[in-house]
Length: 247
Image (tube, rainbow, N blue to C red; front, top):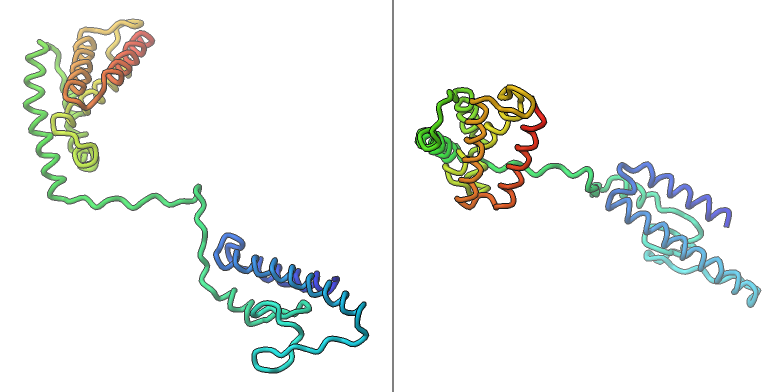
């Protein structure tokens, strides 16, 4: 048993030197072979002890594949009595490692290819829609303030081809939906900056009209089917709370 233990330790040490052991296909297979070898060798030892008690002579050696006697071939490449086939070990070392990718180490999926023509068309459609919608909104809400900062912010976001293309191609939004989404985002960020306040929880004239733009964008998104009633109300409640806290 002492010799078996020493030989198995030699095999395990050799396998542990393999890259990514035991997180590889070859490493896992080799470990399974070692376990099977242990079972076979222990069985052979037990069998030999039983035969030794019942027979005075030693068992005749078995012939290997080539016809030459070997000391009990247990598994291909691994010889009985603890002998190890060096060629098998070398083949395991040189085998391609099938590395197992753990969930935490998964690489992000490759980005989808974007058609440059469709990207340009999407941006142009949203820019044109924004010009028309802004005039309609400005007149419809009876706004008096200058919203150059908001217009600049919305225009920059629409010009971001990646974001606009994603909204239209992946979220199935229309150019109108993209404009409303960016309008609510920019107006919401400006309201949370605190610059529109003239006191604690109190908006100035410009801030009040900006809040009207924010509410208009959200409710129109809901009417067009791009947001639920619950989502719209949740965002409105959140903004009301932020406005009361600032200033």
